[in-house]
Amino acid sequence: MLGELKAEHFLPLIDQDFTVTYPDYQETLKLYEIEHGKKSVAPGRFRDPFSLFFNGSDPERVLNQQIHPVTHPTLGTLEIFLVPLGRNENGTFYYQAVFS
Image 1 (cartoon, helix red, strand yellow):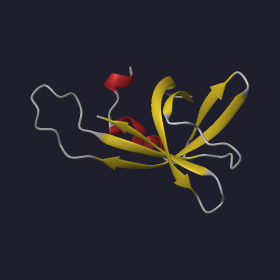
Image 2: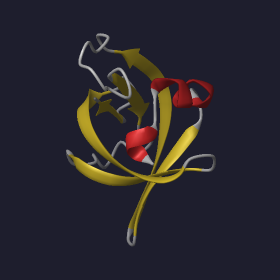
Image 3: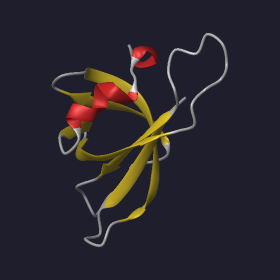
Protein backbone atom coordinates (compact mmCIF):
# COMPACT_ATOMS: atom_id res chain seq x y z
CA MET A 1 0.00 0.00 0.00
CA LEU A 2 2.82 2.44 0.82
CA GLY A 3 4.04 2.38 -2.77
CA GLU A 4 0.56 3.29 -4.00
CA LEU A 5 0.13 6.43 -1.89
CA LYS A 6 0.31 9.88 -3.43
CA ALA A 7 0.40 13.31 -1.82
CA GLU A 8 -3.32 13.65 -2.59
CA HIS A 9 -4.08 10.78 -0.18
CA PHE A 10 -2.68 12.85 2.69
CA LEU A 11 -4.22 16.25 1.85
CA PRO A 12 -7.45 15.63 3.81
CA LEU A 13 -5.36 14.37 6.75
CA ILE A 14 -3.55 17.65 7.48
CA ASP A 15 -3.97 18.58 11.17
CA GLN A 16 -4.89 15.00 12.02
CA ASP A 17 -3.08 12.70 14.43
CA PHE A 18 -0.95 9.72 13.49
CA THR A 19 0.42 7.34 16.12
CA VAL A 20 3.79 5.60 16.39
CA THR A 21 3.42 2.63 18.73
CA TYR A 22 6.01 0.36 20.27
CA PRO A 23 5.49 -2.14 23.13
CA ASP A 24 6.88 0.31 25.70
CA TYR A 25 6.17 3.67 24.07
CA GLN A 26 3.62 5.63 22.04
CA GLU A 27 4.08 8.98 20.31
CA THR A 28 1.40 11.09 18.63
CA LEU A 29 2.43 12.91 15.47
CA LYS A 30 0.32 15.63 13.84
CA LEU A 31 0.61 16.05 10.08
CA TYR A 32 1.08 19.77 9.47
CA GLU A 33 2.43 20.13 5.93
CA ILE A 34 2.77 18.38 2.59
CA GLU A 35 5.50 19.56 0.23
CA HIS A 36 5.44 18.55 -3.43
CA GLY A 37 8.77 17.72 -5.05
CA LYS A 38 9.79 18.21 -8.65
CA LYS A 39 7.59 16.50 -11.20
CA SER A 40 9.12 13.27 -12.40
CA VAL A 41 9.98 12.97 -16.08
CA ALA A 42 10.96 9.31 -15.81
CA PRO A 43 8.68 7.07 -17.86
CA GLY A 44 6.48 4.73 -15.86
CA ARG A 45 6.66 6.72 -12.61
CA PHE A 46 3.55 6.14 -10.53
CA ARG A 47 3.80 9.30 -8.46
CA ASP A 48 5.62 12.56 -8.15
CA PRO A 49 7.84 12.88 -5.07
CA PHE A 50 6.50 14.56 -1.95
CA SER A 51 7.33 15.02 1.72
CA LEU A 52 5.16 14.88 4.81
CA PHE A 53 5.99 16.97 7.87
CA PHE A 54 4.84 15.99 11.35
CA ASN A 55 4.99 17.62 14.77
CA GLY A 56 5.71 15.28 17.66
CA SER A 57 4.07 15.46 21.08
CA ASP A 58 6.78 14.37 23.53
CA PRO A 59 9.55 16.87 24.34
CA GLU A 60 11.39 14.18 26.32
CA ARG A 61 11.89 11.75 23.45
CA VAL A 62 12.99 12.01 19.84
CA LEU A 63 12.15 9.27 17.35
CA ASN A 64 15.32 7.95 15.70
CA GLN A 65 15.92 8.29 11.98
CA GLN A 66 14.54 4.94 10.88
CA ILE A 67 11.42 3.14 9.70
CA HIS A 68 8.55 3.46 12.19
CA PRO A 69 5.07 1.88 12.33
CA VAL A 70 2.82 4.92 11.80
CA THR A 71 -0.93 4.42 12.25
CA HIS A 72 -3.86 6.54 11.10
CA PRO A 73 -7.54 5.50 11.42
CA THR A 74 -8.12 5.94 7.66
CA LEU A 75 -4.85 4.54 6.27
CA GLY A 76 -4.11 1.85 8.84
CA THR A 77 -0.50 1.15 9.81
CA LEU A 78 2.25 2.17 7.41
CA GLU A 79 5.98 1.55 7.76
CA ILE A 80 7.38 5.06 7.19
CA PHE A 81 10.97 6.28 7.29
CA LEU A 82 10.97 9.32 9.57
CA VAL A 83 13.80 11.83 9.91
CA PRO A 84 13.94 14.14 12.94
CA LEU A 85 14.60 17.70 11.75
CA GLY A 86 14.82 19.61 15.02
CA ARG A 87 12.80 21.02 17.89
CA ASN A 88 9.71 23.20 17.84
CA GLU A 89 9.50 26.26 20.09
CA ASN A 90 7.54 24.19 22.64
CA GLY A 91 10.38 21.65 22.86
CA THR A 92 8.72 18.86 20.87
CA PHE A 93 10.41 17.46 17.79
CA TYR A 94 9.33 17.69 14.17
CA TYR A 95 9.88 15.09 11.47
CA GLN A 96 9.96 14.58 7.71
CA ALA A 97 8.95 11.55 5.64
CA VAL A 98 10.02 11.58 1.98
CA PHE A 99 8.13 9.63 -0.69
CA SER A 100 9.85 9.31 -4.06
